[in-house]
Image (tube, one colour):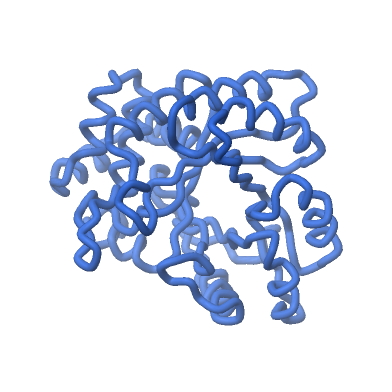
Length: 294
């Protein structure tokens, strides 16, 4: 058994390995806690290597999560600090006190105060004692890319703890919450140039960019985002990165992904480490249907 409590399984291409975090608590799936944990247990048992087997849980719901843990559970926790920096210490203490939880990373939404770089500068010292990787989520808007340089500068300190990265929101319940391909390309390229990794969340419901039948919103595809990271890591111009994010033709995307050298795929994944999905079955189904996974 691994430290995550699941059996190792067959390998997948490096572009897709450990890509999908379990965000079953979040919209649109928004499962009740007991149902979300039951699904997570089933995924742990299946041990598909495309899943990270991390369970995304807000700090405000840690007590609820603990109340439904069963003897023998080992949940690899990705903690979302929705309680603000003042809630960090209590959340870390609560997670550490529970044998059924293993804290693997922390995600921190930054306040929408019009100064993303300043918010990052204020947050990083408060997070200095967190030994797990931390991903800061600056709100998209004027100056949001400046937060990347702040995180990069902090990560270069000799006494810096484990990885500090960024988180990008790729969609939401309103059309304006979806960044354009150009905006997302700017973020991806800026992260690569700064040497900072990123996670993604929201809106990445399928592999290939397409319109949602229910809302009409154009959703980014997680395969598009993987290829954008690969292009950025290979030194492509920002326009080329935006081009693959805007692409809707599955055939060309599948060809590019299928012919990618393993070294380039690993570089892409060192940049784009994972994304949260409210469904843990749909991403697998999409990649299988595209013929990228046997």
